[in-house]
Image (cartoon, rainbow, N blue to C red; front, side, top):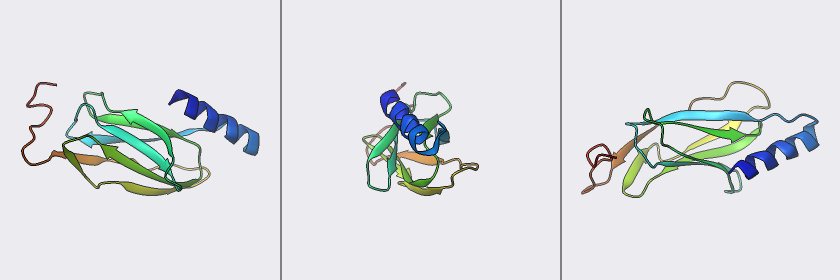
Length: 116
């Protein structure tokens, strides 16, 4: 993923004259180890991805400002609310925190119950 971040920053520098990358962040509630949060562009290409290992469920994704993006969490055996969030990001400005709630699917035990 670091190569993708670097490529995005290089492209931003080439087109805008400055290398400006920013961050979209949020929390998975309750903290659920192993959740992958993907950031996709408007064409469905994953431009960054984060594995949630923070004990508080925090994640952050790098993004070149401006454009339409979708943030999607995933973990087999879990459902998320909302299932995804679509964002239209300004060239400059503050980006919203994107939080999700995680719930084990029927018949699954939560990661805290499994001791992970």
